[in-house]
Image 1 (cartoon, rainbow, N blue to C red):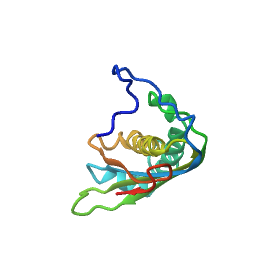
Image 2: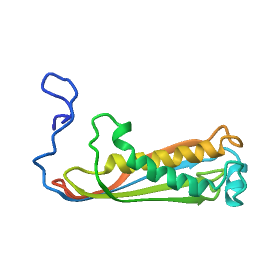
Image 3: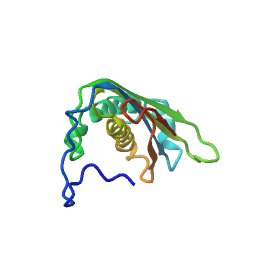
Length: 163
């Protein structure tokens, strides 16, 4: 099995050196879902009628800002010169698996550098999803934010991985 790269042989945490790794194009896509627990937030988001404003636009910007802030939030995460961050939010209508609907969040992040951007993509999804929760919490105390994960990673020595 592979050793955890952020641990020294004695078990203490350290930032991994990427100085000898070549710059390659790196891409990651992450997703997550905010599930509403009543019908009110979906209706209000669709009508852009929540008191805090345009949920989808504000959450999109929050996700982009979160990706850029990743190394200040995640210990030992390298600061990376991101070349692209996009965050898409899509309303999910109510169905059998989502009784009251929700919001699907997808973030795509890219850079040309020596290390991957999976953490930035995950952080973008978390920032956007948490903003949806914050903006809707006045009308829905029971929201769930689930299934946050990386679904695509490209570039670097390990190549492409897809869920």
